[in-house]
Image 1 (tube, rainbow, N blue to C red):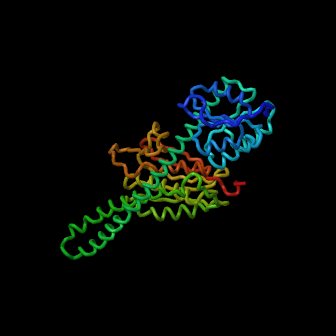
Image 2: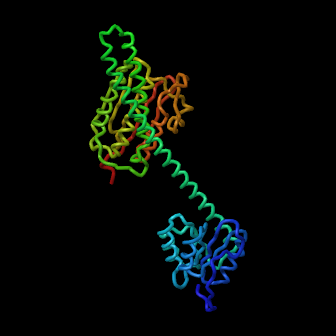
Image 3: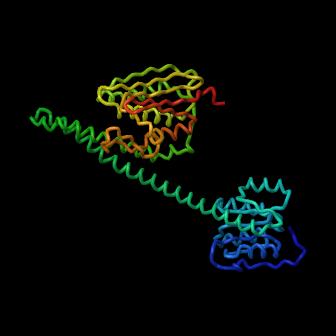
Length: 381
């Protein structure tokens, strides 16, 4: 609130201790600034008598918390908050308000004020609120650091994947030419070994493709693009692509699909990944001569897409872990399970983003069934 006392322009140089987090107190009442500064002993204190002076200080100082009154001459606290949010959205700002200033508080919330302190100021409450604001700042900084590290990891995966893909492609082409050149040379013993080498190379190629997929920023949680998708057509296409892998193990590969009318509502790219990952897992863990079934039908207003196998199954105590990042079920306890352990993790995350329920039905020695319950497009409104 404004005061009739003569104003003296203050030097923003800290007036109390120099160590500790920096708090900028913005208020046109010198007495209130002094009281707040004393209550915050141990912090580095800067003072400003209005919003314009506060902006000047912020331009040249690193401030941990801004503590600002709302009603001030020249520039109000709300105007100051708006300027701060434009220049530094992560700056922590606590607003001091009077009782009953409901409209002002609502406006401050719209401008993303971090906290509020009611006037007349309770000095014990002031200390608590400032410490809470500092904790919030620390959490923001940790989050920003984690995002930066995640971005660097993604860029590294992308770089490594692209670097590996070229030599693997060259080696694969060389093997194909070598197999042709060895025909009729009497060196069939070497030629017969080439399919095993090619198989391992195909596995390595698959790992590289997975790395490229996991580093694809278009698949982050914010990139969801839902549309009406025909699940039967999508499942048939994916099954055709994966059928050779099943045939190589002598697996019976069965489809029992009822049309989805209306189609399902999903992100096509993510749904394709989920279906591919489930079928690929079923083929991977089903022993030679086993059976993989993919069924689809409308059940109680949702499309139930199930992938079933008669593999070794998943022990009940591992059901909560199979969707965790990097977790792999090793039924034979070989320590040689292929892949990264990210497939089911992304199935769960993508399904969550599309509001798709995932059901797991499995027991050791009884095979595994994973069902996706997809919303229908007509229910999107």
